[in-house]
Amino acid sequence: MLNWLQRLFKGKATERAIPEALWQATLADYPFLAQLPATQRSALRTLSSRFLAHKEFHGAQGMVVTDDIAVAIAAQACLPVLQLGLAWYDDFVGIVVHPGQMLARCEQTDDIGVVHRYSEVLAGEAMEGGPVALSWPDVAGAGHSAGQGYNVVIHEFVHKIDMRDGAADGCPPLPSRAARKVWHDTMQTAYDGFRDKVAIAERFGGEPTWLDPYGATSPAEFFAVASEAYFVSRSRFTEDFTPLTVLFDQFFMPDRPPA
Image (cartoon, rainbow, N blue to C red; front, side, top):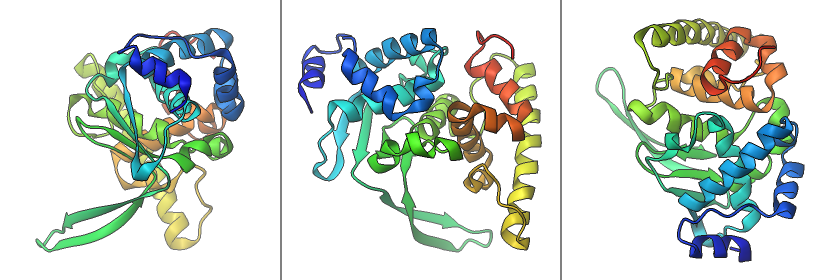
């Protein structure tokens, strides 16, 4: 870690403003952050400083977490909670940064009781009640991959939002049964339509989907994948998922002026 982040951690959770040069370098690396309105960029900088004061970064396999790595992750992680607040992330402290993608050992039992064990390559992982793990190359490339709607930090931190009321199921905690019904109905319609498009593309040579087909694997993954695209490529996302843009605005950004 470099000097600024070391001083921050020695301050024992004392919030310190992200230095101007470091913040500007982060905006330059991630244009979707630089394109936010000035008031939102200022609020994001403040929230990112608070995030850094209360989270602990760990480098895997001897990786050194530098100031620019920590600030890049903090800024992207704080984007989904810019209006919701950091309390949505208060169930964990640790963020583990890997120098490359991770190999996870998985186990799944099929419908007839046979256990299948396999390995899966991951760019990130969010653990219920536990830390978030991220591949630094995927984080670092997020400025370039925004045009494809891809962002591993937002993906994993949206899973943490989803997990606030238990295992990720594609629906975050909402204030009423009516709100949950609207969420479920809107998401289910979009998810079903997306799964159909992915199936047509994969099985019958149809046009590939712009949104990552990984979102078709479950409602929880669809929520995370859709949220990535909503935050980093809003206009393109809205072309395919206008009802979801409206739904996500109401949840993530209720103070946003109507389009």
